[in-house]
Structure formats: C-alpha cells, structure tokens
Length: 173
Image: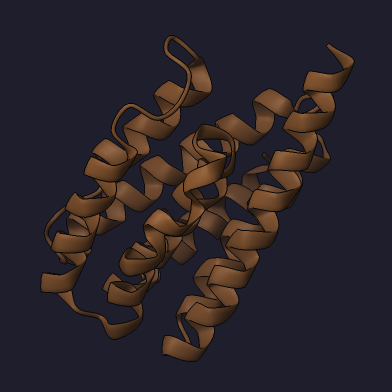
C-alpha cells in the first residue's frame, strides 16, 4: 500500500460518521465472508438494513444474531478464518463513532490481509482492488441510504471476485 493511498483511506475513515464507519467495517466483513462462509452470505442482510436506517438499537440486535448464526463457520486453524472471526468478534454493539471507527480500521487491515494472502504478488491486483473498494465504500456511504446501496453492491462484487480467486487457487493446488 502506498503512503498516499493508505493516508487517503485513513483520512476517509477519520472523517466518516457512524453510518459510514459501520458500512466500511461491514463491507469488509461481507467481502471476506465470501471465503469464510460462502453459503451464509445473507446473514448480514439485517445488519446492512440497520446501517441504512442508522438505527443503533437494530444494529446491536442484528450484529448479535449474525454472530450466533456464523458461530462455528470457517475452517479451524485457518489464518483467514481467524481474521474473519476477529472482524466478527470486534463488531461493536454500540452505535457510536469511536468504537465504530476502531472497528472499521481493524476490518480494513484484516480485509487487506485476506486479499493479500490470495494475491499472486505482494500488493498485487487483488489487494489493490480491495483498497479501491474500501475507498469507494466510504465515499458512497457518505451519501446516505442511496450511497449504501452502492456500498453493498461494491461489497457483493468484491466477494464474488475473492471467491473466484480462492476457487481458482483451490483447483490449481
């Protein structure tokens, strides 16, 4: 990650409001869930709905329900599973800027690490694409519920890309 690019992403995280921060962290988790639990993609739908409404009470409930539904998913002892479990475990129940900001930063780093693990080269195209998606999600989320639709679409697209790369790797291994 170049200094200018990482600064730009960190600046976007620093300037984001609660909704933008929740969307940023959730989008990272959503994309990585494609590898962690590919058959459970819809588990995060109620969490996305809470973000769209900016509803802190619904957020906490939806997060807890997703944690329960995803408990036990992923391969045991796998480093990607550990990163995704960390993202899920770190979701703050409180809808407040500082805990959401810390979580968004952690998710950003974890998602970049997951993508970097599957990239052919260090900081290759998969990593670069993830970085661009993270920036686009933060920029889109700043435009309210309409922007969140785009953020979710970007997340879905990113999950498909990551799943395809992982599948291709598994076939050639």
